[in-house]
Image (cartoon, rainbow, N blue to C red):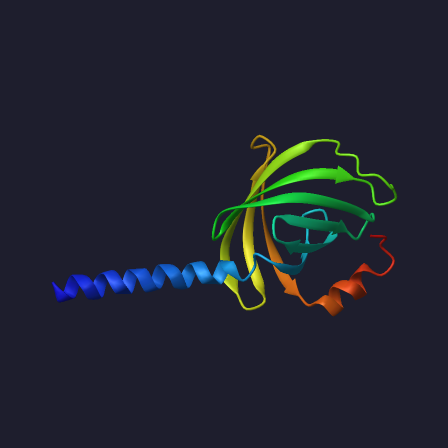
Length: 140
């Protein structure tokens, strides 16, 4: 009986330890490079995410829904960075699974667009100062 209790506590601790690794990425500022050699900045808070494509200057706002500690869904609302009004061109669900975490960021897999795309990437957590520096010249 004591063995079963110890085993249960071990698996409970292991499970919560793995989940806490993903929780620290639910909010913050991030940087990643896409398959197309384009650089992106992310600001994530609450149920919203803002993504800037530094190569072309576009800004994309998404609704963010966490499906679990290491899985989330984004609904993209496309907008041009130079426009004064938000024009939602389409609503596209995209699913992200965090595969591996470390102190500087996480590896992820994106799938969506009716399974037309799937790719792997690396999201690096950055501080506010670096976000501001990288956003210079890109209109919010």
